[in-house]
Image (cartoon, rainbow, N blue to C red):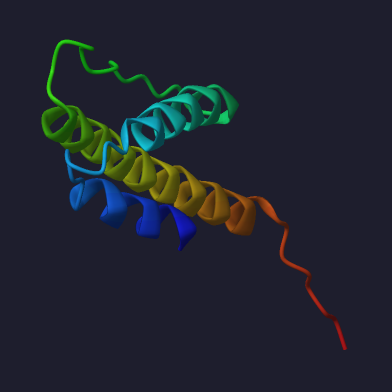
Length: 92
C-alpha cells in the first residue's frame, strides 16, 4: 500500500518542487529490493541527463513493474506451499 502511494507521488512529479531526492530514494529501494527476491529481477536506472519529470516517469514505471513482479512471485510462492503440504487422511 505504501509503495502505491510512492508510485502516485512519482506519477505526479513536479519539476518546480525539485523532488529529485525522492527519485534517488526509490532507485536505491529498487536496487536493494531486487536483490532480496528469490527470482531475479533487473532494471536499468534512467540516465542522469534526463529531466526530472522524464526520470520520475521511468522510475515510476520501474516501480510499477517491480510491484507486479513481487505480487507474481508472492502468489506463486503461496500456491507452491499450498500444493507441497501433504494432505492428512483421517481413517475412522
